[in-house]
Image (cartoon, rainbow, N blue to C red; front, side, top):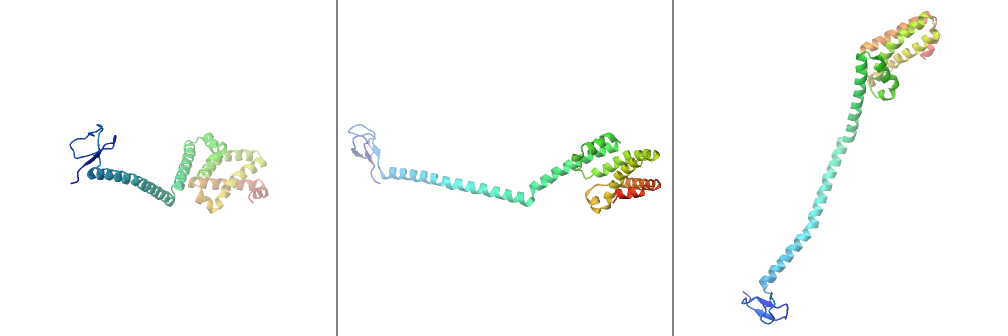
Length: 217
């Protein structure tokens, strides 16, 4: 084993052996320049360098892994069409709420409330597929009595006005697309068809046949 060599940082004198840790000339603490001490220092420096050099690599791996996860999440979102599904779900909930509003008013026979939905707030309630169903129900409640009053007084203008409303509502059903898009109720559909047929017969009796058919061209 090589003998330890110590150098004084003050006067530069060297001392061998381990008898003293201080310079015999100036009394300053000696620096150990032995191979063992030097190798230990070198290993410490190399280890520190290695650890420092590995930091960017570890950081790079973290960044790559994070980007990969984000890419996979984005691909999953696109593949499942999540934003579109969420939008459709929100729209469906909104339409269901509008339908429930009108259904409650109809079942309670709250015709004033139903009129508010169908007439005053029609731009909103048109989003419901049941809008025309409940509008027809409101028409059937509102217009037949008014038609009969006009018939009793031979008010042809009022009869034609009401007939046009009812006939146009009924004629919408002639398009098969109507039934694939909008909600219907068998009871209401039958009542609407029956009312238009009744009014048609009365209009013919009153000699308003020509004017009546002009409205439905």
